Image (cartoon, rainbow, N blue to C red; front, side, top):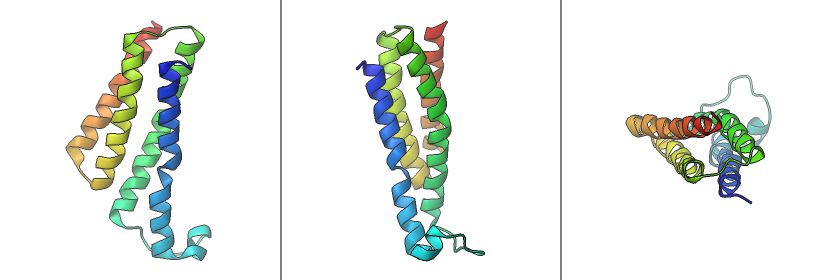
Length: 128
């Protein structure tokens, strides 16, 4: 497995477990029955859980581009120091984004999102 595919595996793993804390908060706040059902007027989640849910949605939305680029680069046999570094940095930037978004730290949230986006641009650039 290439380094880029390993990074993609870690990004997918991170995205696959991001939901757990905010679902636990949903169960704690709304109760199990309402958490698995469709209550008419659900109680709001804790502010951190609301932010975490938004961070998770953002991660999934951006995973589509990242995964497509990594898979295209792999199919074309393109692997170099830029692609390896961009994939590694992307993972850490997305992890930081998730944590600082949850903590409600706006400037770091934006900075980490931008770093991840620049990694996507770097990967895209390698295709051209």
